[in-house]
Image (cartoon, rainbow, N blue to C red; front, side, top):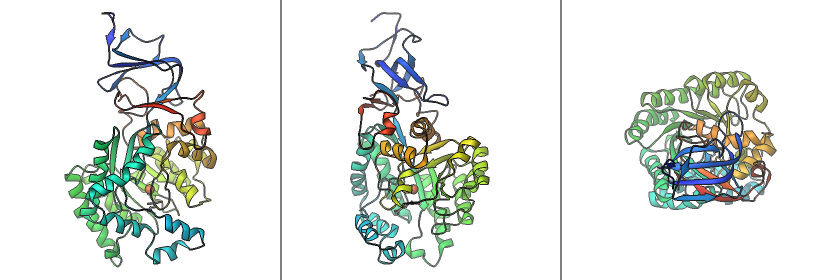
Length: 404
Ligand code: DI6
Ligand code: FE
């Protein structure tokens, strides 16, 4: 080791980089990444690099390095599954018939309430491992199948435990207003009050949530109810995000933007004023092609309008047992391109830079830039488009989380 060199922990050399810094892929031929103390010390062209040395130098043999992938919208923690419901639907049963027969979201609530925290963590691990196996280094996990204080806390604690079980960053979101529990069937405002005045304060105090979300929909919660929840979230210093305009338009994306929401998600029925409001607020549009595919939706989100207005676009799995049993960000990218006609650049940015933005983590991860966490995915591919183009292939060569 030369004494003039900056000594770091590890160097990946002879790599091609898609740094995702700026507004495009940030392509660099003959690039290198250097890590020290889990952070990126240098990412860029070998030619422009300072003198660097490390006890561990890895030759990438021309492989591609991208930022570690980020899944910015999941319901990864839940008990049971709804495969039987899927069979019934294939046999012609309607959503209402299934719900009346005890199926639907409430069946997942029942199973989740019956499971212990350790069981919830254990059952989420195979789903987490599938995401990690494709290069994910940061994952958002929502509550929302507990629907009372003890069970929502149990879900959030199970989500936080995932971070201790695997080398991955987990962000938790309190989604108490996901569905109306049967105990409150006749008193929806009473449930919203419970969310605002009991659940949210306790969860904020325990430091169990990084953000607050709600399902704003005719079959979910009204904009007036979401307004109350967001006011409470802000009072506790928590950023908000929203399941908005998924099945109908209710001006809920504009409401989210009004609260400076990190993201508004789904957005199939988003209208032009909603797009404008999101653009002004810098709220990220999180599109969920897996849910669009699985429920066989035909209404496309207004991609052209989002692009024109300059709204940042992220994509995510929405991994959940009812509308998107999906645990692949590579397939999510393929669906984003095939179903929504997103470009390769948009798909890749959607699971890196823009997904980080949707979690309020852009200063920390999502691009290959000095100072950020050294979260990398190293791929056996010839060009970045291969990550979007293939269906069911996994060209991940190695994954690095916090420099390891
Ligand atoms: N929108 C969805 O698509 C899921 N939740 C939501 O707010 C459905 C969740 C489920 O059916 O279990
Ligand atoms: Fe969701």
